[in-house]
Image 1 (cartoon, rainbow, N blue to C red):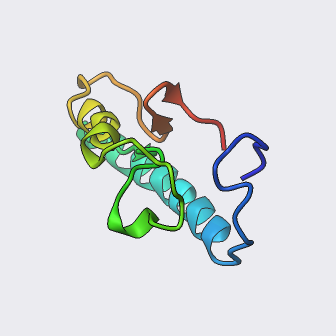
Image 2 (image 1 turned 120 degrees about the vertical axis):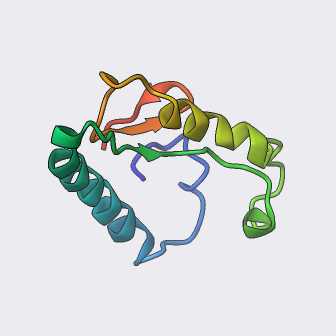
Image 3 (image 1 turned 180 degrees about the vertical axis):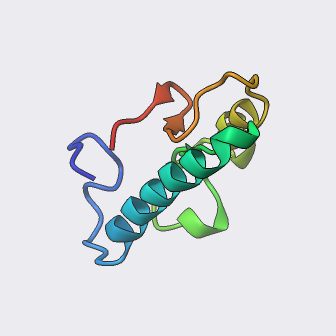
Length: 96
């Protein structure tokens, strides 16, 4: 939300959006801590801006839903010793 190059920067402020994403990241960490002893990995995924019915307000998006799903598939197929409690996009970990 602070990256001036991000596509959301030019959009009107959405009071609930940023706090809900922060809460999701925090919940991801809490679930990861609780479930790690059971060998369950919990991560959050950012599919990136994909052209869907939901994103019609963002003209020019060319990524497909399948493109965005790639990070989800990668996280769902991590080995048992993979990362947990993180937030990832197609390039890897995303700081938050």
